Image 1: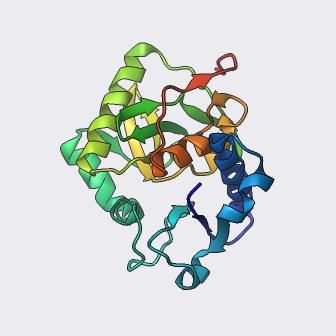
Image 2 (image 1 turned 120 degrees about the vertical axis):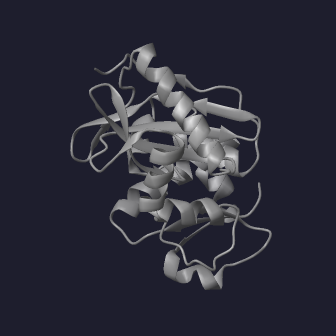
Image 3 (image 1 turned 135 degrees about the horizontal axis):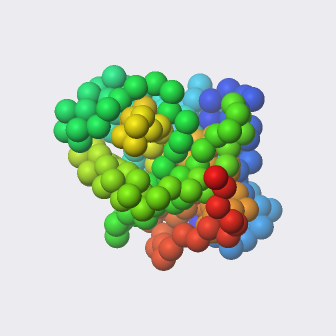
Length: 220
């Protein structure tokens, strides 16, 4: 497999993401962690200058990257840091309402051959995430349409994205966009196959994907 560098913020949240991404890569490769360990490096943002290599696949699990750091997701990462501009785009180009307080996340698995969408993730209490959250088809289809138009407008490269949103009187309220499987994506582990971390690796490594399946009953 190609040399890969996982880029993290400081702990503690990043420790959870680190373990999930390591397991996701191993799952996608169909190998044990020990078998791929020598091909995967783990660094913090502050250590980036020491590891840059044009042949490496960089896998940031943070949007807090230096503006000058060049990698496949530089443009979309910069866009996701500018939340106000993203919201302005969503409101003016997509016609949706915007605001803080998003308590749901739509996984958009943006492959080179087209998008796939994971089941919505929700939270019942802070720090507790569940997938899937049931949505009626009348809610699901407008959400998928928004995701497709929005990511197309941003010229998003292949990756797994999380669109954070909520509803107000059945209308989508867009909050923000993550260009990687952020913390809510841990809810997909053991529930979705492949999970969102494995999906992310397959997208950024340009590996083919066929489908995603949810293996558990719906959460209300």
